[in-house]
Length: 83
Image: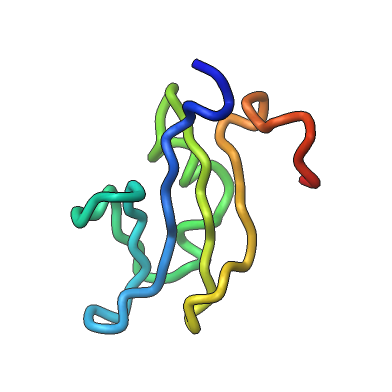
């Protein structure tokens, strides 16, 4: 699987349930829900959630703007990316 084939996810705030939801891009179903953004971003949680296949996660702020993008596992991060 090449870097471009990595599954893509978005971590965003759910204003109706007041929690944070990780969804695979193009899906309406939540992969996992978190009480707080900090719970989702604490060491190893997203990596464990995505498993061996890993993926690219775009992390949003509460206003919907993108804060950052992370790749799991780190070894699959494209060489030409800033991070």
